Length: 333
Image (cartoon, rainbow, N blue to C red):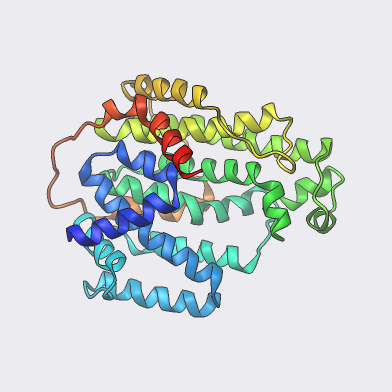
């Protein structure tokens, strides 16, 4: 991977997602570099689909993937960097195709009748990321991959629960429609005039309960990752779960309040992640979600990498990470 291409991808990552940038710092370079390339391409793809003509953008992105997987990438840093990652790690094409499909569903403004349908969306936009990150870490065990997908889906459910009001004001709705109607809420009326209510809080609480179940299932999968990779993934897991806990502390009002995790709590979570990284947990042998079964199959069938580099520990960064991020954000304000 060219250093100039990697630098361009890193600039996209640092400017677009502090959370992803933070987690990436805790990963060994052999994982961090291809993950950076993957993020950059996915961010460009999301922007193209969201801000342009979705069918045209999707067709163009599939053409770019054709070039990447043929080792003839377009003359763009993110394409060249992703082609290098694909070749080195044998990243299955299906995972990226499913991710692009999820972006297209977003652009279409799809809604989801029940939790199972919502999980199919979350599997595309986040479960795929869990599977791809596991592949970059050298994981091919189907049980561990199923738990990686669980984590991605759990994080997306947390995002949805946190952003209910923001999404509604943008004309979007991700809460299960059957749950809303069962609670006496009319989906279209809510989107037209989003307001907090006990009924809405109940629906949001149910969604966070589903996410919490998946977080617990994911823990054993994180514990099965290479040691150098565990702190960053545990940190992401605990931070996202804490966002959900903050939503609950706010009375599940995600309409007038946006849940934020205080800095002190972030530091506590950093310590928990250090301890969790050394834990040994029995694998949770639950089958994958129906929504992620094809992702697990594709990732587990991927050929292993040609060589395996030694571990590069990043644990020492964890304790100060969130403080540094807060300082960086303060300088921007």
